[in-house]
Image (cartoon, rainbow, N blue to C red; front, top):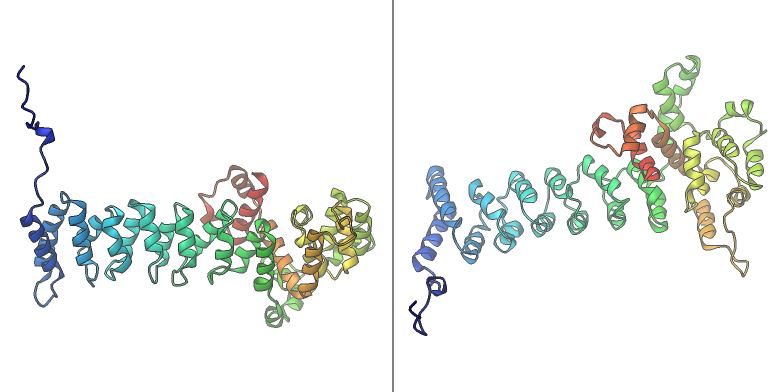
Length: 406
């Protein structure tokens, strides 16, 4: 076998050829033609040029593709075939288009969001006026940097489905909560679901922003209560709606069946030790379903107890009785209120009766309304694929109760 001379090169070791000046010039000229105004080039000529440019870009070097992308970034109309190719490219190539190109339509951006990388999605989330369709595509992977960027973008528009998905996601991604609470798309029903796994600061914000008065509803539907009474409340749909609006929180009919003379008596009995039976009686007397009461009594933060007492007209001494009945710590070694209990007492003071009733009724509505066997099965199985078939309270129940079943 003949030895190679010291300076000989094998084919694999041959130096790369110098950059082709012809290729660079042609890429620039083709990009220039695509950028010409419609007065200089018609749609067919622009399309033909874009097709040729795409074929060259498929085998061009990264820097060559990046130069073309920068050249096209300011276009007000970009051929779709070029947009699709360049937006799916590596981020170094596509970032100028994603940041600056006004010609990108929702179809272009959705395609990029679903077929490119996380940096592409984060840059799309920074764009002005991101549509709800694009937001849906950006949120699907639930990537923390992308979602946080999108939630900070006040000009992005979130769909109802996106908000619901994000509310559910906050269980696993608590960092989303403060950002989501600032969104204008968030509704009271969403906030009251989120409340159950939010921290103390977020809970305070929810109560301050979303604990609204029902005075307008009460004025609008005031005469309907008499109509419903004359019909003996035979219409279940209107009865449930009026129960939400009603000024009275306590269930007077429950007193007749209760072993306790009043709600206060039931609370006093609970001070010696909360049992399931007493908890159910307090729930019934407070106008709540036992499921809602159980959620309130088992909540580790304690704020729902303050809401329950304020909404039903119970004094702060009753709140202390319930706290003791649940065997929770009241004071520290110096005799000062334990921080958690102090926060609960402050919650009682800060919220008005009518607003506390609004919160309580939202909870009761969302946690216990129309819980069908199919819904309960979906909760247990974690099946949210058929969410569209469920009503708002049913979806709320699915989100909250599935947290308890994890």
